[in-house]
Length: 160
Image 1 (cartoon, rainbow, N blue to C red):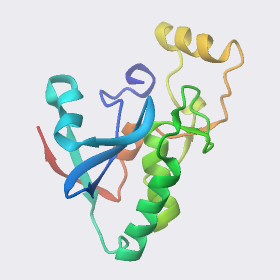
Image 2 (image 1 turned 90 degrees about the vertical axis):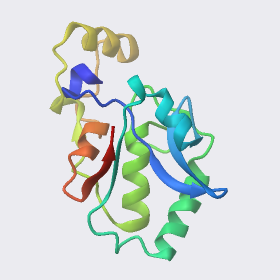
Image 3 (image 1 turned 30 degrees about the vertical axis):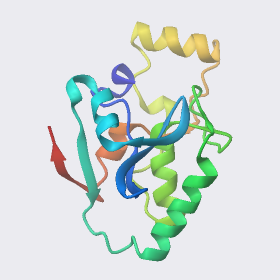
Image 4 (image 1 turned 60 degrees about the horizontal axis):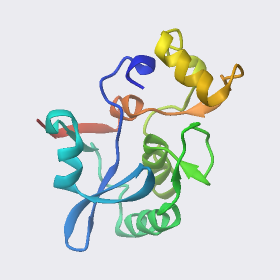
């Protein structure tokens, strides 16, 4: 992901309060909840960037409740190693993007295609060939953690 996107960021999730504590809803192996501090410890050198909407007004109580219900829909689904834009399996940035779009009507950046990323690096080609064979679906819609981080709708509120 780093080589294809040119970003050091390879994973993302959405922070919500659950069971009285801040937790990260994420797609990793399966879609599940992780306590925030545990999630931070999994990062390289415990690095993280916490972002939020510049204008939180779209996140009404009703829309947050809908987001939580949608989280239940995705919970337990497998991680999508092929980065397909479906709901049977899902990858991290797709999960975050869809939760905001479906429940608050907000698109955290434009969707892209595989063709938009740097697929020339030998390691990227090796992984893509292992997953897709010679027919990489270049026009499949995708989003990456770096795309969400670049969203004009978000601002950094904390990082280490």
